[in-house]
Image 1 (cartoon, rainbow, N blue to C red):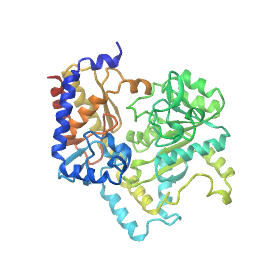
Image 2: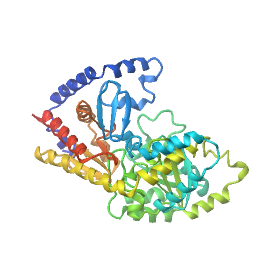
Image 3: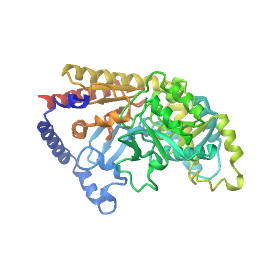
Length: 457
C-alpha cells in the first residue's frame, strides 16, 4: 500500500462527493452577481475568464472581486473574504499597501513609461544587490520573462542548447520547462499547449534531491543552465535534502552549466529569499510577482563574472534584437512601486511578523490532524505553509504529483471559500502578508476543523 493510498483510505468517497455537491450548491446560491457576470463574460472570453487557469477555482464559476485592501477582499455580491491566496504570491505584500499606493499615485502624475531610466532604477539596483548579493541586474515585466531571458543568455554564454529542470517544476510559461518524466524519459507535460518542439529536444529533467540523476544529466556536456527553485513550491513545498544545494552548485560548476535560481515564490523565506538566507551562490537569480506590490514587474540578476561576459558579447547595434526586453519592461510606474515595496513593505520587520503567522497556521492545522489521527502533514517555508494528504513529506515532484487528490482539494477549498476564506486554487497553500493577524490564522484553523469534522463524522 502506498503512502497516498493509506492517506485516503479513511475517506468515505461517497460522503465526500455529497459534501462537495452541497458546498457547490451553497456557493451558487450565495454568488448571484458573480454568476451573472460570469455568464456575460462567456460571450467574449474563452470559458468566461480572462485567463484559462481561472477556471480552476473551487466552485462552478469564479468569484468576481469588487475591491481589496490588506488581508481581505470583497466580491461583487458584497461578501468579504480572508485572502490566504494573495494572488498566488503576487499580493504577498497585502492588497494595496499604503507606501506603494502613494508611490504609484506620485509617479502617475509624472509619467508612466519613457523607455528611459529614472532615479528609482538606480536605487532599486543598489537595493537588489544588497539583498541578494548579485551586483548586476536587468528588468522584465514578469518572472516568466526573467526566466526566459536568463535561459537565452545562458545559451549564448555557454554555446549549449539544453537546459535542466526538475520534474513537475514551474517557472511561468517558459516553453522548455513544461517537460516531465514519463517512465524515466523526458516528454511534454500533460496540458502543454502547442510547444514549438517536443521539449525533450530542449530540456533534461531529473527529480529534485536526486544527486545521482543530476550528475548523470550534466555529464552529457550539453546543458547551458540548471533552472531551479531553491525549494519546489508549485507542486507543494518540497525542501532540499541537507547538503543538496552545495552539491548542486559543485556539479554545475564542474559541468560548466550556469545555475539560475528562481526566487519568485521562495521570497517568502525572507527579504533576500532562500538564497540569501541559506548562502546559495547562483550565477543568475530571477524574481517577479510581489516585488512591486502586485504591479507587473520582475528582475534578474547576475554574478560579476556573468555580467562581464554579457558585456563582451553584447553589441550596441544589436541590443534591441536579441530576443530580450520589452517596451514596457522597467517602466517608471512599476519601478516606483518596486522601490516603495522594497523600501517600506517587504522589509525585515515585515517578515518578523509574517513568518510566525505561518508557524501558527502550521501548528493549528497539525493539531486538527493529530486530533483525528489523520495521515496528513503540514510543511512551512517562511511565511508560506501548506497541508498534504499524505503521511510523509515528498522528496521530489513525482512523489508530490502522485499524492494529489483533486476531489478532496476541491472540497477543502470550497468549504473554506463558503466560510469566507480563499485558499490557492492549485494546491493547499496559505500565504501571509504584513496585514494578516493571529486572529486571521485562528479563523482558518476553526474552518479547517469544521471541514474535517464534516468529512469524517
